Amino acid sequence: MKIKAGLGYDLHRLVPGRKLIIGGVSLPSELGCLAHSDGDVLIHSLIDALLGASGRGDIGQWFPDSDPAYRDISSLELLRRVMVEIRAADLTVINTDSVIVLEKPKLGPYFQAMRANLAPLLGTEPDRIGLKAKTAEGLGEVGSGKAVACWTVALLGYRG
Ligand code: MG
Image (cartoon, rainbow, N blue to C red; front, side, top):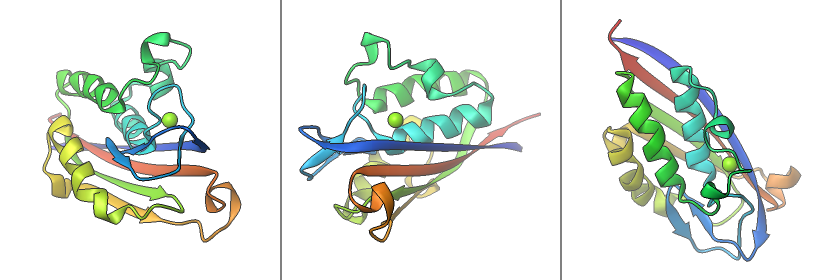
């Protein structure tokens, strides 16, 4: 099996009056992501990693934030649609690995629930979905709690 790698990155502002949804899990937080969709920074970076690895553009091309159809849509649904295309191209997810940078809340207790959401959509085992949380040590916009960022790499396998 041959492999293709993709890298994804996303960042969202954190504002009052929005839910904080990461990996499809609604987290306890006074602030949530300002976004056209549900603002799931993990899934958005994951989608861009998958699209990058498969040579299929980026999330903005697939789901423009100018399109009312995607207003407040669950990013799990966006991921489901991307995976239909990935599978149709005979690509399979070997593994993914993400780093989420956020001051609070602590994410570790929610990783199992995030993996349970993502694994069936990705068609892979939960232990192939790497999730890591970091803080920005109080530095910059992320460090002051005004934003959340996420990086993801994805490996896709294919027979060539
Ligand atoms: Mg985003």
